[in-house]
Image (tube, rainbow, N blue to C red; front, side, top):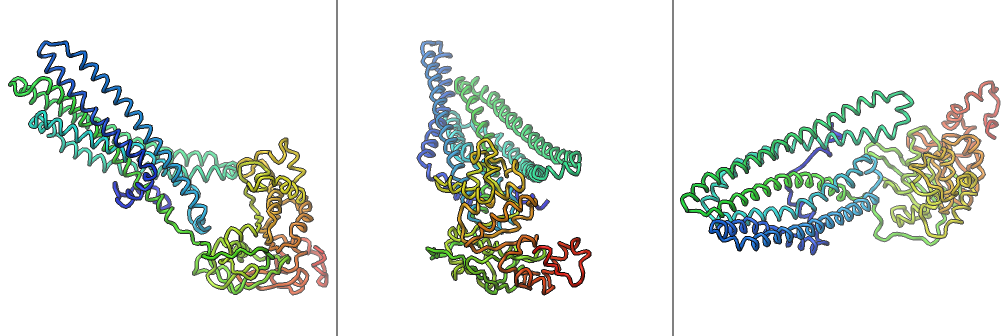
Amino acid sequence: MNQYHEEEILGKAYDGRLARRLLTYLYPYRRVVGTSIFLLVIISALRLVGPYLTLVAIDRYVTTGEPRGLPLIALLYLLVLVVQFGLSFVQTYLMNWTGQKIMFDLRMEIFSHVQKLHMKYFDQNPVGRLITRMTTDVDVLNELFTAGVVSIFGDIFSLGGIVLVMLWLDWKLALVCFSVIPILFVATVIFKIKIRGSYRQVRQSVAKINSFLQENITGMSVVQLFVQSRRKYQQFDDRNQEYRQANLQSVLYHGVFFPVVNLIGVTAVALILWYGGNQVLAEMLTLGALVAFIQYSEQFYKPISDLSEKLNILQSAMASSERIFNLLDTQPRILPPARPQRPSQIQGKIEFSHVWFGYDADNPILKDVSLKVEAGEKVAIVGPTGAGKSTLINLLCRFYDIQKGEIRIDGIPVQEWDLNLLRRSIAVVLQEVFLFRGTIGENIGLWGQDGQEKQVEMAARQVHAHSFIQSFPEGYSSPVSERGSRFSVGQRQLLAFARALAHDPRVLILDEATSSVDTETEHLIQNALHQLMENRSSLIIAHRLSTIQDCDRIIVLHKGEIHEEGSHFELLKNRGIYYKLYQLQYKDQLVGMTTGGNPGQLIS
């Protein structure tokens, strides 16, 4: 249940600190908001005119038997309604326009901020939560701006105007009408308490459904492979029923509260008829005033009902804004330097000097690691799972900052580099290739500058991707579906190589880049790799030792420390960790070899 805790908390009904911060988003549109509030004042005043015109019509013309003034009163009444309709339309449009503008601004601010956050934040926060911040929570704030924060002024103006007019007409009858307000207050408090728990349950149920759907749609191949469809259907049915019950509970509370408000309003009308009727019979109140009182009382309880609903909107908005501001207040831990270094020429010399690092500072992954990669040198890094190979890459790209030591490129610590220039100078090809929606050409060039088509095609040709790209009817303009599902694993890897080459990096990193490639495709890209690594500093992380035998050096990591270093054949002769890894991979081929045989012959 704890994983849904953040989604279910609704917070206080009103938080002044959050409200003031939310109002800053209204500030750029203050003129529109001011116009909208001004229109609401006029609309509220016009609502008071109708019952008063009724009073005038009855007392001056109906009861006196003078019908000549009735057409004018009816025309005025109609005119008031038309003007009220027109102003309401303009006010509603202005506030919805403002709400959409604020939603746009807020989503852009959130997206821009998320792009600056450090990798550890994404390690600790699921994707679904971040998407919820940009969609559901922002939508809740839109409802606040369009139907809450400004509309509350209209309800308050209406209530204030109605109270003043009723007290002016007959203060005793007004007090009789207001006598049921304590009952309404108690009903509203009970409704608020009940609906708060109901909304909490609804949000918690939604969080469960979203999490379940994201997990199961992503892992649909596993679900079908292990014939889990029926079981997953039942699990989803349980969550869906929970969500339905939570919504039905909310519907029940609304279904009780609003009829109660109507009942209280009808009770007020009954009291007006009883007391006011006696006043009319005693000639202490006119019939027109009595009718006007009934109309005003009906108008009086509608804003109160609306305010109760807006209280729920405000409460949800406070919770959503708190979650959004918590995200926006999360400071990036990887900050650009005050005076960033931007060398005009990048050689690609890499140096790790006594580096200590752990994703959890108390559990170091790398322990006093020191290594050098000269400009243009090809260095492979191998070791068992969890040795810290990929961590080296994360630190070199400055996705994380180290706890101790120093990492330098061309003699400049990575913390002093211009962050964008640092990452543009490094190309990383991962085992899992991520392709964006768009075209093949855009995924290779990654939406670079115009006129780079020749560069993209040249890169694709060098890694032997051009032939399969041309097999598609639209060639480089062929669309790429989500995550490139229409391509094979090998084709996605070739596109990743082309992407790296098209950006002409000074440092190339291959992180298990060929481990998922079939043998035929691996042969295709081996000579392309030689061209790709030519005159570039290259770090190759690999489990398949057959792919790194031509490297200048091989570094063996074990439990976060460098245990061995040398060429392929030197490490085999040493019969250390590298030799044992080699034996594990080629044990079937080693069977039958004589003790004096040279195991290096297998891959020489």
